[in-house]
Each structure stands twice: as structure tokens, then as C-alpha cells.
Image 1 (cartoon, rainbow, N blue to C red):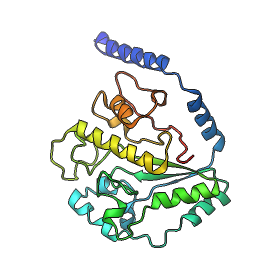
Image 2: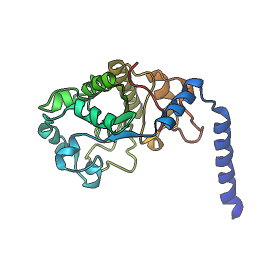
Image 3: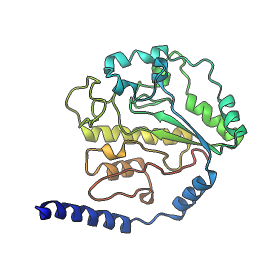
Length: 249
């Protein structure tokens, strides 16, 4: 009986150990880690159409809101008082060194001008402005580094399948093409990189929920990441959740 449970555990341990031994961070990666450790203080902003409900980014899942109903929210998202200069000035006055903001959370809504979907702030809201570009320009002006939190989990895209444990009440069909979703994700990231001149990627939440064994490597190669940015074990593909990258040069 003990052998039944011990052998899988030992195999898992051996694979994890092998993964750790195989990964050697590059000098750039180490410098990025050192900068982040020394910076210490920054602002993390979660902002999206869920704000219309006076709730957080998990409201669609937590309140079991279906996709058709959730799609009504952008029509009411019109942040006419948004002032990136005030946000950046507040961070700078407090002694913060960087700002991290959600470019896309699990609801799949892009807070930038996406060319891969119309589920974005430009096409679906009356505001019709790229708030991330506005914020990036102000951060550059004031010498504050800007980072993005970009979700892999997507409760909007039908091809994010298998579904995982969240967003199951969105009303999507119980089918999808995972590799088409990876293509979409890679193209969206590439486009995002081009807009903001990103040299590497910021924070990828939901990595442990990726259902395909080769997901990490496929997305890495398609999005043009350097191999040193990733520490993937052969038994559990895992994109980075804490890779630090300067968004602008």
C-alpha cells in the first residue's frame, strides 16, 4: 500500500529536481530580479469593466454571471475622469518605483486596443481610448516603470478548453480548440509587445491551469520569448508569474 503512494511521489520529486537543475537564469533575468527586490514599493491596479458593478475582477465567476449578460457591462464603462497624470503623481509622491496594471484579467476583456478581438476598451465602451497607452506615456514622462498583468485564463474565448475550475457558468459550449486559443494568445501578446515596445513579459496569472502539456513551450516560441525567462518542469508546464520586464525603453 505504501509503495502505491510512494512511487508517484518519488517520481514527481525527481522530475522537479531535474527541472530546477536544468534552469539557469540569464544575467538580464538576474538583474531584473535584483531591480525588483531593491524597488520594494509599487502600485498594483486591478481595473476593468467589472468596476461598473462596484466589485472586483472575479465577480463574473463569483456571481455566476453568464457571458451574454456580462457583455452588457462595457456599454456603461466610461471613465471620463481618468487622469493618468494624477495616478502617476500619486505613486511618485508616495515613493513608489513602479506601477503594475491589469491589461487583461480572467474575463478576457482587453484594456487596450486589441487587434485580435473586439472585446476591448476601444470597440465596446463609449470611452474609446487606450487607457494603458495613456498611462504608459505618463509613466515614461515621470520615470516610473510600468508593468502589465495579463491573464492566460479567459472566460470569454470559446477555444479556452478544457475549461478548468473557474468561469464555468459563462455559458460557453463544452468544446473548443486549445491550440487555436494558444495561437490567439500568442498573436495578442505579440501585438501587445509591439504597441508598448515590451522587451519581455510581466505577470502571467493562471499558469498552473493550462491544460495542454506543451502549452508553455508553444506560447514561448510563438510569442518570441527567450528560453531563459521560463522555468518549466516536464510534468507541469508553468509560465512565469513573476518575470519582471520594463515596458518601455
